[in-house]
Length: 228
Image (cartoon, rainbow, N blue to C red; front, side, top):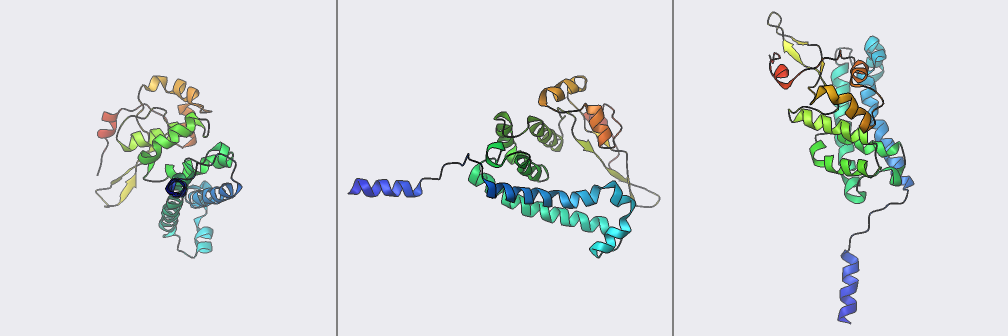
């Protein structure tokens, strides 16, 4: 009798095995999370919106001057909400990859983490998912680059650009400076690494897509850039 009771207690406290079968409900939820993740970014960074901000500001009920601040605040609020849910999803399922939610939904959790302060925490999870084929490897490479840049280190694949501004001593206003591709370790070999990781383009093409003239910089070059 004691053995039976002990066995029942063991079964009750034993964690449920991770799901590997396709989960349609989780797919729908992650599709929704991704759509919200992209909504405010699309408005904030769209060239079309930047050319005609008045109509968007009127539609959102804010002034043209306050539009960028409003969109940024809404984007950050959404990112925070999405991250809380994604943390819970990873806790329950592990990384929700191709087997569990299909493609391209398997990229939704990656997007939320990429836009969060949690990259260092979840980078090993992303790496494992990529190595297992649950996520495109080039997305892991892109996240790795962002973490390296945040740590002040050279990136490996040339995916990350940096923008900054300095104060104009005459006006006191901060003025944007030309953006640049963050320094790359072994810049001469970056396109070979990009090809191996599955990127469809070169570092030069990626920079052009970001609107950044590509030039090779070093960490000392960045350190010499004006900070004020």
